[in-house]
Length: 250
Image (cartoon, rainbow, N blue to C red):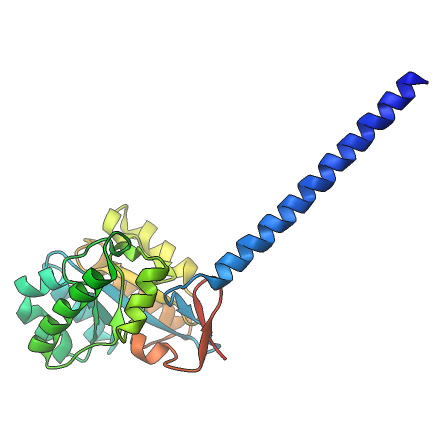
């Protein structure tokens, strides 16, 4: 009799622990989902049925591959978006002027490439404005696109960028070309991940990028994709963001 009583108490205890565990897990998932929905995000990609994508380059180092990149884009009459760092602009004003003169879009990628989650709002604004002035002095035109250095951001960064009048642009297709792990690996990584509304990320200083850029363009064109600048891909108003950073029409 005593043994049965102990077993019942044991089973009730186990069931109670399971119930508590399920409740905690459900609450954790709910709170996690709520936090994700309410977190401020940059634009990773765009919700669209049209087979259009944007090719982007982060430009912070070197200039030896710029001509090959521009030649590949010219060959297929494609306009891309170049996010430039102010320090690079100082050393390569003629390259920036050439990129812009060919009809490509210029984005602001900060002046000194700091981790913006580790500096104050005032410093973020100062850094962005310095590079904005450099871009404008060379091209004669400003930009409304900004990409965080290293893709690093938090709510304060996104809020500051937005209040400064910029659309904060991330990416959903990363070539990871800066690691230079191999041309085929980088190429396949891009092709497998691209979908309508994607924003593709490359770097101007990666050695396999000029070759892969042309391969990617040919492959995606054969699949019916069109290439547009980021400014022509994103929605400028009446939009919302989902919890993964996809920009959607209201």
